[in-house]
Image (cartoon, rainbow, N blue to C red; front, side, top):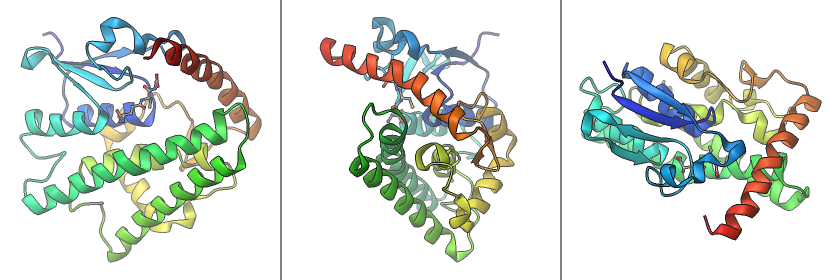
Length: 250
Ligand SMILES: N[C@@H](CCC(=O)N[C@@H](CS)C(=O)NCC(=O)O)C(=O)O
């Protein structure tokens, strides 16, 4: 049988969210690995699927090749159309609202702020201390928001496991890429316990592969020198691509 969905992705936190969700729902899907190094995400054919030219995106063949972009919107779409057992989103309206609140919090806060911390700390051609500190401090503040959330003894961000946990997990799991090897998620012990709890799920194990940043117990396995080499390699195409895209207004 032909796959139900095609997923256009790369093994980054935003891409991994969708891989986890598809594996949670056991949806038969095909993966199209987008090549950032050739700027494939800005090619015309892909802009028809995602006008924003970024991963992840899906095309749902079981619903007339309907295309969805933005990882948060994809998670909600999968919950609406492919989740009869409410694995991704609770049925109870208040719990459902809470899960959506934390998903929006991740999409508007944790993802963009940690993403900027990655950029200023790892990829920027100049090391700008103000930019690095601003986004690293904000990322840590957001971790402390989650830490307070777990203070009432809850296991997951919003009632049962949901899209909120999936979305926040993939970012929080790679904390050291944004914050450096001296940072330890153990400073947020309830968040650390939650990371381990989520990581036990088989769909999370499979959905996180392949991870672009090797992790062991949510600490980077690679040395500072190896991390620097990887960042330099990625920075080459990130910066070249940004210049080209600015010229072409993509
Ligand atoms: N808010 C978007 C963010 C998507 C995004 O920034 N994707 C990055 C990788 S994580 C990307 O495709 N970057 C390539 C580019 O900027 O051209 C989402 O959650 O889907």
